[in-house]
Image 1: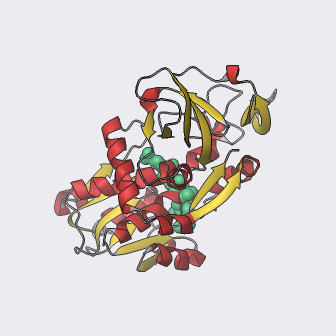
Image 2: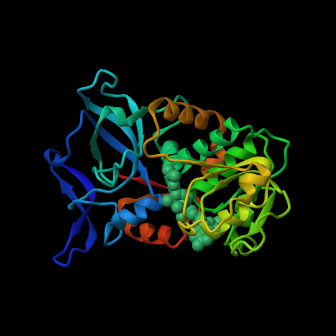
Length: 329
Ligand code: NDP
């Protein structure tokens, strides 16, 4: 038996969370069983913890948790043996497949990544999908020519999970970082992470009026989408790139193509879920090397399985600052 947070549906088809003991035989199919140590809370977890599952959860009862880190307990795959430390993000685990909000998980070996040297299970979950995606976004900007010294790099939704990690990584790599936040009280926090400029959300979330504005940003990690992304495209320097990561401000993109045509701006799509193994490995190794652990600690909020229903609701309202680390034991 093991403890897990289980989403159960009532007669009206609405799901709610219960924390209970489940028999190991109920675990889904997979070739590796992991003793989970830590999980976390991403925006998608908020959706999976909601009454309708955000359109992501197909079958109930369901154990959410899109990320986890822990120790291999049993393995039918030659790549993993009991005692190995592993991390999992993506592959629709926690949505279609049972996830990390329990003391045990069973998954496909293909979905796992060995925990890089120098990173504990707890630190890996302080990173989680949000931080892993931030690193993918930074790597994409670098692959498209971003180097320090070209001007400020903008991070939108800066006090959220993706944004916080992106600020810390970019600042540590020597970039000048500007963070957009709708929470003025987060200014100090963002400066601690390494931002040198704080931009108020209101300055950027208005509909595009002029397709081109002053060339300001050397790069951008965008967690917000919508009107803000549209505005930012018109403010990018010539040839600069934006990594499009999220839709916290909306899935629309009410923009013109002018920044692409007249300034050679690049819009780079970032997907963390189906990312190939080699790139996952590269991103986790870069995280262990380029994300300062004292900064990661400054973003961490500890939590337990009992806290998750509230945290899920909070993250959907944009009210979680930094990264939640859930001790599932
Ligand atoms: P968080 O809720 O932690 O962060 C989102 C931040 O966006 C908030 O903290 C807030 O920052 C800002 N924000 C919220 N609402 C609005 C709004 N209406 N207008 C402008 N800004 C807003 O979520 P995560 O960091 O975990 O995820 C961010 C986004 O990235 C989500 O949309 C998520 O789905 C997506 N995502 C995508 C991935 C991928 O593979 N592409 C992987 C991981 C996440 P502040 O208070 O500073 O303004």
